Length: 331
Length: 220
Ligand SMILES: Nc1ncnc2c1ncn2[C@@H]1O[C@H](COP(=O)(O)OP(=O)(O)OP(=O)(O)O)[C@@H](O)[C@H]1O
Ligand SMILES: [Mg+2]
Image: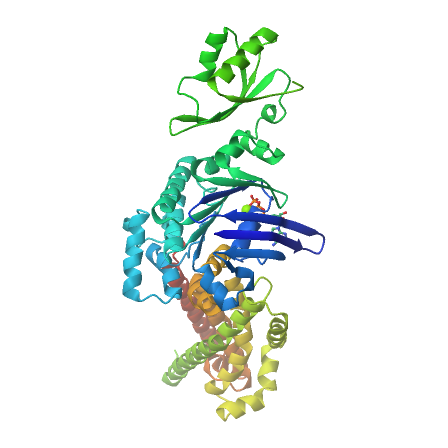
């Protein structure tokens, strides 16, 4: 279990003082995939770097399985870090080492015997499906392959926790998806706790159990992914869920409805069915829906017809189908 | 054209020059690499920041680097005598060469280390590496290609210094150029020594760069 208590990190520069993280209290359970989402500059990286003390918090404590890391000696901290893997947006592999030697690095520094290390490396190469690239150098790999090497390297010392700072932000959507699948399967197979930092909602959707929304160094809200997605409370959460390119979604006008699809709805196509059932037309202003595991997940902003009768029909229809909606404008 | 004696002289001069240059460079690296590591590790953003150590080492390095080589050479003659028992000849020249080159090498090494990707160092720290493990397993291997480029440049620079030492009793091609070309106006001898020096620099340079491209794994 990771417990962050009253965690604050202040950066003092010659010009200003920045609270990158402010009074954060967070508990992450063992075996959980926990997301921390927020816009750029929210303090996500600083927060996650405080978990393994790459960044020393100004105040507060970081307690992992009952041990307060901020109170450990340098040597004890090094040992604690061996149980916390970390993967990065830029992969951060050793450029002069082969794939297998990169994966062997954490075993070398832990003093694992050569033969045992080789066996473990082989096993990890199989796990991330890179056996044929064992002798390649990082410069000869694609981004997705590099991240798989980084994951294998993070897993080598059998960590209890893996921290991912924007681990998929440098990858294309398909590669992102496969890396996330890999992380999720490791979580399920090995029970490793995963903390995922991202600014992309779909990353959270795909693998997280719970999520915290961060803005200006503070946790604005926290809950299950579905809970936050379905019913975002904070302004930040609403803006993250809605597509950033659409002003329509963030400032809904009158006569609009914001629909939330949470994967519970039956398979029938909602909008076309609704227009038929209600015998009316709606205008889709913006949509941010995704098909995850055959279920619709996301939000849609629709413009309603002017007359009140049609509007009521539509709302009744949505109520009937159990689709959550929020009215825009003054309504 | 050249007398056999002159040929012998040039040949032994070439060997002396190679001897002085290579031995001085090696010894300069023995001192320069740790100094460069100290500068880097204790400097801003280093893994073991230490203002005081960084300042002291930095100032010593800068002082030694700003003294012109010929003045340094004369200035440390007593030290040279104490170390090798004489102040003339190739072996005696190695002492001032090392004193002049070690701080230069330290800065070269520091700048090579500064090229290392900060993210890689961070990853090593996150994995629980100790300072020594980071130095041996991350800093030196990751900077290896750049360190080799630096060594190639250092070698050529030290070769230039060794030729200068010919003015004050050093051996090698520099001494031949001065004794024959300058004092006896045998400009053909001077020309030949210069050509030999150019060829040696060229060989160092080419060989160094070939080695670097073979060693560096960052390019496909
Ligand atoms: N070393 C530092 N010195 C001074 N200020 C810093 C430092 N690191 C981060 N900050 C500041 O702290 C705030 C949070 O930065 P952080 O990198 O944690 O944000 P982030 O949420 O990870 O953003 P991004 O999504 O762009 O990576 C920013 O205002 C940033 O400028
Ligand atoms: Mg960040």
